[in-house]
Structures are given as structure tokens and as C-alpha cells.
Length: 315
Image (cartoon, rainbow, N blue to C red; front, top):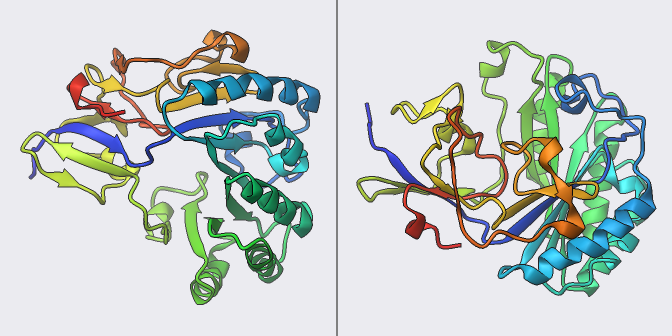
């Protein structure tokens, strides 16, 4: 058994990622929705757009403070029923390079095409994750819509994701084959309500090719292929309950990653409770890595790097 110890987990996306939850509202109510089943979000209440516009003007300050280019990751609910072109226009910083969000693609094709073209005019890439939900759409029509948007908007970063359970498993081969035939990236994730036995069938696969981490071990060796799940389940004593034992490590939260809930912000939304978030206008980026004191371990959530030695962190 390999007992090498991890000393540095370097996130390979060398950006400041701002995760911005716009709303918990969604026009779908999927039976396997994590937001409903786990987080108990109210999916009927839509955030006031003027409140988001006001926050956007303050968020632009974070981009100007950043020493790195920036990715904004929008979270819902379903965010594509907001006027995202107007919202992003309120963030004029030239450091914004990527706008990313998942969508059920229920708005018109023109909505996504026009948004992609607007962002392209500003030198911003639209990274679109299209979530296929058989309870609401016909799979063939959905895939054709994705391909049409990709072609019309000349998008290089668009992909399809689907939840796999007993009801959707019959679609698995067709969706995977169609994506591969059309050179469309895909990812299949298991329904969290399925049993562990079912989730061991090997259907949770992805065609994404860019490795998320570079992991350095105490003997100097590096691993460029290890996934988040593999890191959280190391068999060398560095994990417990699918959490990395991060106490004593330095972390780049607040340097490489921020979490915003409408107009309240923190370095991270996993190890910092919601009641400790502050208004976006009162927050400034961190300038030094944070020493972790969390005894229960880390989910390695968000675009963060962690290292045993502070000087190893090159962010």
C-alpha cells in the first residue's frame, strides 16, 4: 500500500474564481435535484434583478483588486432567465475572461447565442454546461439545441451533463454515443438518492480532458491525473469520511476563490457559515494564504490550492 503523503494540491486553473449565487429559483422541479433534496432551497422565489445589478458594481472591485484574470461562475437555480448581458455589462473590468454557468437550456436558443456573442465582443469566453433533464425535455431535441447553439455562436466551451438513475439509464448509451459522434464533451453524474450499490456500476464518466489538480507528494513525485473524489478517499491516512485532513495546511481561499450569495460574500462557503458573510461592498481580497485549523477535514471545494508549506503556494 502506498503511504506517500500529499504536501501540495495545486489547482491548475490559475484564475480568481468568483462563485456567485444569483438565485435559488428554478423553472424545473427535477425529482433528483440536489438543491431541493439536500440544501432545501426555496425554488419558487426569484432574486430581485436590481439587487443583483447593485452587487455587480461592487463585484467589479474584486476584479480590479485581483492580480490574476477572473472567472465568474454563476450558480442557481436557473440563471438563464435573468438578463445576463445587462448584468455582466455592469462588470466592465478587462480582467473578466470566463463566464461559466450550468443551465437547463430552457430559454430560447437566441438568448444563449446573443449572450455568447456579446461576451466574445469583450474578449470573454462563455463556458456553458447544458443539463439534460428527461423529465422536461426530449433528449434528441435537447442535444440538437446544444449543437445549434455551439455552431451559431461558434462556441468552444460548451458541454452536456446528465444525472444517471434507474429512469435515465436507458438513455445513457444513446446520449454518450451522440455526444462522441458530434465531438461534444459530456459528463454523467449519479443521482444521489440511488444506493451505493447502484452508484458502483461505473456509469459516472466524463470526457473532460483538462486535469483539475497537480498533486505533489512528500517524495517529490507528482500526479497530474488524480480527481477530487480520489483525493478525498486516499488510502494513506490523510482522509476521513471523504474529507482531506487539511488542518495545518495553507489554503488559497480568498486569494483564488470567493463565494457570493446574491450580495453577501466570504472567502469560501463551505468552511465559513452563511451568517459570517459580509456585504460585497465591505470585502477585500485576501493577500496571504490562510492557515487551516479545521479538524474535521476539507471537501476541497472551489478553485483552491492547499500546501503543507506556505512558501510552496505560488498564487
